[in-house]
Amino acid sequence: MTEQRDCKEYSSKMITASEILAKHALELAQLVVVASNGTSDCRIYDGVDTNGEYKIRIRIPSEQTRSFHFNPHIYFRNGLYIEFYQKVTNCFVQYRLRPHGED
Image (cartoon, rainbow, N blue to C red; front, top):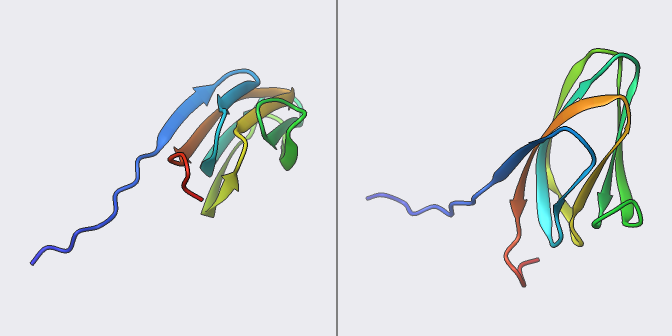
């Protein structure tokens, strides 16, 4: 007998500049940040811009790539905004949008 399991869909995106990834609730699963020449600083907000709740700051040494896996995932209630504050080349983001009404 086969056991039925809950399947969850994830979205992912490679971004090359500061960007709004969602305007409603989601779970952040993974980030891969690539630094350019010099220490890079990436800031992550719960909201649609830098006025949202400041949740995470990631600093990466010059010309490095770092991967961050969040288990359990990090919950964002009001959206997800990623700011390339200083010398970030790009960032791969994996997340799961939460259905409306799901907490």
